[in-house]
Image (cartoon, rainbow, N blue to C red; front, side, top):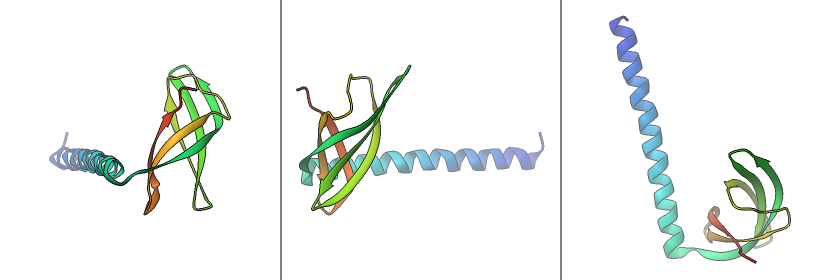
Length: 103
């Protein structure tokens, strides 16, 4: 392999590792923000897709009349229409985490 290809491989490796580290730190910071300043609202499961490696689902929630939608993966049994608790950051409701109710 030429010296150029080796340098290029190292460069892309460092960039990819940097992206993963940045994203990990961003997620960690968001979780700290939610821990300190999060508020709770209810959301509803809108779509469920069962797969071999878990269940993919979509959900929606409303903050101040504005609808937010997202999705996640779980190994728990859930179905469309189930209620979830969502902890969100009031100044940016797109920053959120959820828990599935045990009801």
